[in-house]
Length: 348
Image (cartoon, rainbow, N blue to C red; front, top):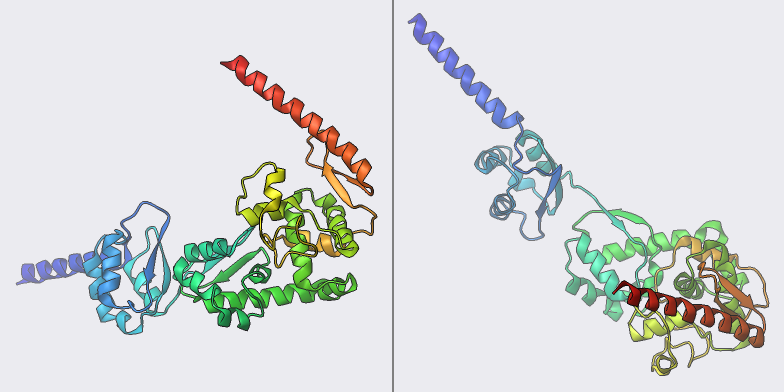
């Protein structure tokens, strides 16, 4: 009898160890540091989640997880979202995370975007909504009216930054968040007042900044570049900004703007049209926006890249001086191209 008791005790102990191992030991089946379990809207149910777990090889013992989830009423409390499962995490921790809706937030990192399609793409890449859903939203005049923008000025809602939201946040709430952050941005540092003092609205300043952003990556000359466009605008001259031609053609890989491109029919063609384009051509950085707001008063009307290919520009107040600098740059560029061609031939 004593041996039977001992045998039963040992068996119970072994079973307890096995159960403890299954519940508290490493439950993950992947080699990466982490993977995500996505619970889709309308599919926060046992079948959909188990299919996702098995298809993506998240857990060693899906059946044990299913049993535990049933016992702890996970399916009754489960909500759509993105849930992070760390390598080596145990089943108890995973079921608690799902039952308590401890979602893993998304860090939406926005740098330079150029088109509304770019906006739709980055949102679809990071959130549950697909690009078609986002495009439908941003092409809806009713949706945009609630944001106080139109299809041309949509980009003004975006101040490049990192935004933390949940994966299942719908497009309307994403854009409302962007609008709120934009409003906070313009309230800080008296930006709205400074724009008004320059004779512009925040949208116009943003549009000028988008052109400056595409013209130079040298922070210390962005103010001077902005002053050229502000001076041209005030003089009633066409802005003559090459980046707007690239935008009008939707060809951002163009290295040089030839005369044939200047006839493109588009409200964004600042060689044919006076005034500012109807909206920005990219999302300028906060630093560039501030450079426009702080741009110095100059008499500059023209600028051209320096012939030393430093990335900086030479600024001029009259056209003859500008032509001289432009010829210097063109001569240096032709020489550089010829040198590269000769080097390529010599290498054959």
